[in-house]
Image (cartoon, rainbow, N blue to C red):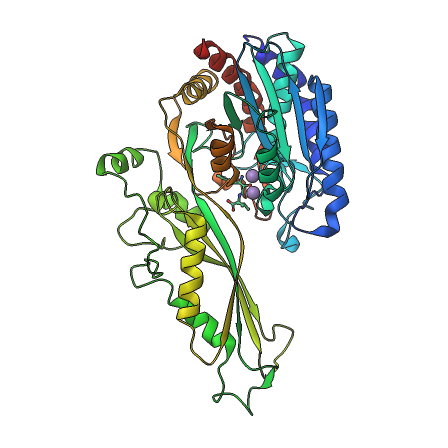
Length: 462
Ligand code: BES
Ligand code: MN
Ligand code: MN
């Protein structure tokens, strides 16, 4: 595998152009207006896997969007790596905040990406990172050095909760049998300090609806005499955190695993500049749970955040009105041992409990998933660590992430294998935000590092 770097350099322009073509398809799973584009993306992924060297590739139908499954089995006595990724992307809005159209990729240099970055929705999350694996396969097949079996499972509903993937995994345990699952859908600390994600947070996502009077009312004739659902909803939401920013839902923290002082000290060694963090976000101060650092708040601690809130009149000018209904979408990020269904129930009970009699409250659970932590003493982690060390020249740091990939816990339960999260994105790549981008350096480094994981994992499995 000494020639991997040369191969990447030689084919660099084509690798970039192929990704750009994939990024042009707006595969937004959340918006049914794009359903044909989501399906077309699945077809494009199928073609790419076949061209890269899979023996068979199928579009597997599900109750929702299809799963692209491909494999190349070289020898049943060798280990099998299952690569997972997603071809769907987040909606692009607010579209007016993009400097270039989200589905017309452009390459621009940035301070952090002096070699340039591809700006497009999905460039980092996850088309770009998924496609690194397709190109890594191409390299290994083309150069006759695929050291083990490989299976690909690329889904189209990750951004909306992976419902169909759960359905698929439960029904296809044998087909998906593997020795390790490999995912590039997370990030690393920086381009000079790689890290491997060893934890993901769980998630409970709910929508709430507060109803007051049976119709919108004149705020002069009725104001002050009936409950205003927006006033009530915002008051209820505000009460979900106390003055120390602890969440007030009874039982919420019962199962939260408290990390030892040693482990927290270990975490604190990761390079981090609070000043640079504040500057990058243009904030004067950070904000969060008392007693924890910024990096602890966004990884080992659970959270509750309003993701959207609406109701009443928001059009031009003024309209004097008391709305009949107010709504909010709320996400709770969970840490290992917190059960997302239990947390959803605790939230529901509490939210109904704190509502004044003057309103009716509905809680609609959307989706969720369990958190995940992976030990660092298994060969999967060791192989990944060695691969990064070889291509970056530095040992990667294990780091828990605040994001969620709920399906990972299900993989462990159904397929009984560990997942290794080899992410190459950066937190500043603006995933889910306007101007999402993925560094060319990161993309090519990923393609270079993945085949080494295959090599070391196979060697360490002997
Ligand atoms: N790739 C992200 C998750 C991620 C990003 C984890 C960076 C760690 C670091 C994934 O596509 C995602 O956005 N997940 C959602 C959850 C899903 C159920 C909608 C999330 O974390 O909000
Ligand atoms: Mn993703
Ligand atoms: Mn995402």
